[in-house]
Amino acid sequence: MFALISAVASLAATVQQSPPPDPCAGEANCQQASAAQLFALADQLFAEGDSAGAEQVLQALTQDPHPELRAEARFRIAALREKRGDLPGAIAVLRDLLAEQPGAQRARLELARLLAATGDKRTAQREFAQAEAAGLPEDVARTVKRFSASLNSEKRRGASLDVGFGPDSNINRSTSSQYIDTVIAPFELDPDAREQSGVGFSLGGQAWSRDSLLGGTLLSRAGAHGYFFAKGRFNDVQFVLSSGPEFNSGFGRLRPSLTHERRWYGGDRYSKGTGVALNWLTLRSPSAQVEIDASVIRQSIKDNIFLDGYRYFLSAAYDRALSAATSARVVVRGSALDAEAKPESLRQGGIDGLLAHNFGPMTLFVEGGYTRTDGRARIALFGRIRDDDRFDIGTGVIAHGLSYAGFAPLVRLTYTNSSSNIALYDYKRTKLELGLSREF
Image: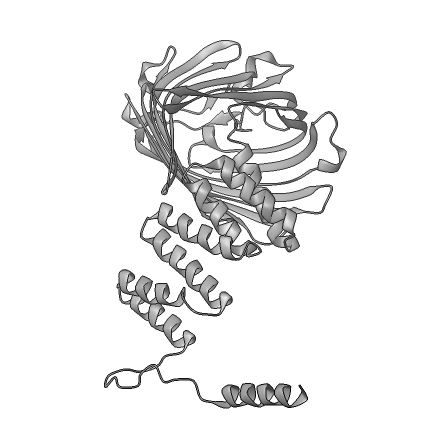
């Protein structure tokens, strides 16, 4: 028996020491390549525009005896297919990867992201939940929670409510000058046309509903916001109603809509408008998104037909999680008013930024913005074309840890400085707001 065991051991050693057969034996133009060389070749082919060739090389690597290399090849195939716009194909290959290696959480997160991009929010949530249950690094886990929250925000019915109050140094956003120069003579402004301070109360909210219609989804929204003061002649209330289909695809979420708006100032109707709007949201990664908004509104101003006209708006916002606790938002925007009276027509452009950091029970944020306003024609009374520069800065804190009945406390301080070549639009404003916010 001992001799038999020794013989088997000797044979095994001999087999181990024998060189593996040469796969290129007898082939004149055959050359062996390592897995690393094949991955590099796939990258080179893709860089040269040969996406199909790159996928063929990676497909060959899915037959490699090493599971880690097979998984890496499938992961890269999924990325190639996504870049070609083949999201179903990318999803299929990630499912194959996870069938073989259920613990590949990076692939599971990518699968969840692609499922969300195709509109399959429910399955995406399940994949996110499974990845979280398996355990993720802290920074990745927080990013996943943000992404999951954005999916939850697309529930069928919902609402939000915000309330606040605080002192405001300039509730009517007016100049502090008593007199303004005109081409005729200096005019004395009525007290209501000059800077007024006071304590204001704000109340706002919105509600939305998603309903099935002709095999698709109809999203309807209603929102209102008002600022109220002891001096009721400065009360400002705005209302917006919109409705339209909602589409989800590999290019992101698209929301075209019809919209109607109303505004009351001092208790009297000030304006109304009707038009169309478009919102497009695309997720660039689990930690970044881009959102585009555009609208065209036909506005009508009560008792001032010279301000009637078309209002155009376009903005692009980029949101990104910079770390586990820090996020940033940058918005570039432009707008135009083509009024019946050309001197009342305007062009505006601006940029806004926000930086937020989470300290556990609270989130501290700082924000700022710049707006440039240019008139389209000379205003006869002033003999000038309007030319404004406005700066806004602010800071605040949201105390999540002090929430009560779902309402989170908010403290915000903002400062505005508008510099204009026409005194009517030259003003400063400081505002402190103490508020509560909740989503339902």
